[in-house]
Amino acid sequence: MRDIQKILAFCKNHKQFTVFCILALVVIGAAVFAPVIANHNPYEAVIAKAEQPPDANHWFGTDKLGRDLFSRVIYGTRTSLTSALLLVVITLFAGSALGIFAGYFGGVTDSVIMRISDVMISFPGLVLAIAIAGILGPSLLNAVIAIVAVSWTKYARLARSLVLRIKHKDYMLAAVLTGSKTGYILRNYICKMTMPILIVTAATDMGTMMLEIAALSFLGFGAQPPVPEWGMMLSEGRAYLQTAPWMMFFPGLAVFIVVAVFNLLGDSLRDILDPLSD
Amino acid sequence: MTKKTIASRILQIIIVLFGIGFLTFGLTYLAPGDPVKAMYAANGNVPSEEVMEAMREKMGLNNPFPVQYFNWLFSCLHGDLGTSYSLNKPVVTVLLQRLWPTLELTLFSMFLMLAVSVPFGVLSAVKRNKAADYIIRAFSFVGVSLPSFWLGVMLIYIVALKFKLLPVISSDTGFKKMILPAVTLAFSMTAKYTRQIRAAVLEELHQDYVVGARTRGLKESTVLFGHVLPNVLLPLVTLLGLSFGSLLGGTAVVEIIFSYPGLGNLAVSAVAARDYPLIQGYVLWVALIYMVINLIVDIAYEKLDPRTKVR
Image 1 (spheres, each protein chain N blue to C red):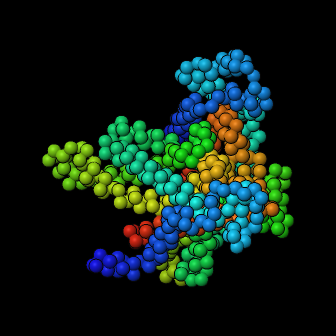
Image 2: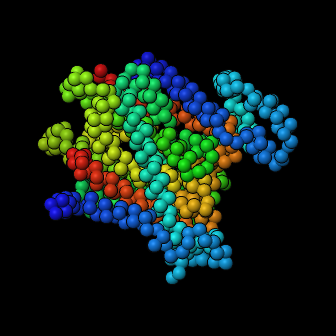
Image 3: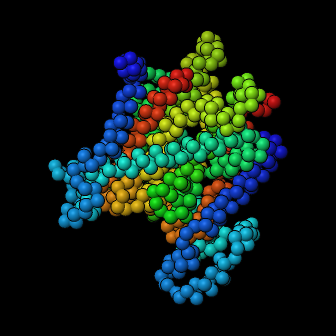
């Protein structure tokens, strides 16, 4: 009971955050309950009904193969959320791990990791992502790998600076003096101190990551047909702009709304945890 | 910047270029797919295995990796980036052709971005928590979340198809071809910069020198334009250099939407055709342009900032 009261009090104090949290839950709900919400099979093509404008049966109209656009947009939430989540989690762990190693061990490890990161950062990310995704071959997983390859540096730098800040604190020296094993120190001191900030950074990056995946898919280097993915649906609809504009309109609106919700959630999360920055 | 730091920056650029070169070459070496097959397929014929094998031998594709890499590096250092498989032209020629349209587009959209975000950001900060501020903040929020590829296509639909104000496809010449792609590119950046400038102006307004200027009885406009704005705009120069990189990457999406004949469009078709020399050339070029521009920006920053001369 007391827990519920605590949560309610928190919600009352952070109304903005609560609203965005609920919106994000709605988006996640749309992904989880996609089979219940969608009123058609997103893969079922009925050529006779191709390129129909929105009506009572097909709320968002149909695409070039007569597939129901509303169902495809709803199922697209699954693709977008899972790939963005996968991307954020891999980037967070790979980047943080490398940054923590660089910061904690210093020396050669530090120079090698940070010089590689310098190479990556002194370079426009999407350009390399396009090259990597294209060279590995087009697939959603390869798009994720390509974006990880260019965005881990941000986390590595942040993790390294956080580690350097706590490395020489007294309790760290005490841990070393009392003979704690390096693995134990990394797990119980370093990770515990750095992870909260890194995870918040990752949460605020969700929206951007979704946009990047959608952009690569739009270029044809991400999701492949017939998977319902918003970026790919947009590129499919582009040729029909004049005759069937709804094929572009709704998937794009979906990207915009979902990215906006996650950006707002990230912003309000940062406001709560770091009230000084405006 | 002293001559020494400039020299070390140039050295750094060279090292990064070697790194990027090794990375892209290694990736294309490891990539699945046969470039010889792709090359013949691009020209529309499928020769026998013997012919392809002879071609592989001739192109040096059967050599071990280090030999291939150093051969490639050697010709790179002589300014020869190889021949594009799909276009059958030297990579350098192709890249040079496409360079100017992309630079033109990037610079124009940067100009648009500054023309909108500086007045908006300042206004938003001065009218903090008033109607104007809320409207500008809402607009900048929309800009950050709006996917550029969607915005671009919607602009085509509304401006070019519905009202027929501008051409749909930007492949013809003239200034008109640049307007829609540049607006699309500038949009999300404008949003980010408006936020930055707003935050920076707010911070400066709390500084002691502003209070001092006000107590001396200076007009609010003099304080704002004579004192605050120079302090806000100076750090912006560095940011601009960094944004230039994301713009160079972002043009790929926008150029595809508008069929704009630039570097990004070229890169996407090169990737689709598995045209490895062209991909490598493109990546190296963009890296070089980006780093050189950032070096120039950093040098310019020191020249612009009077504080650095005192030391």
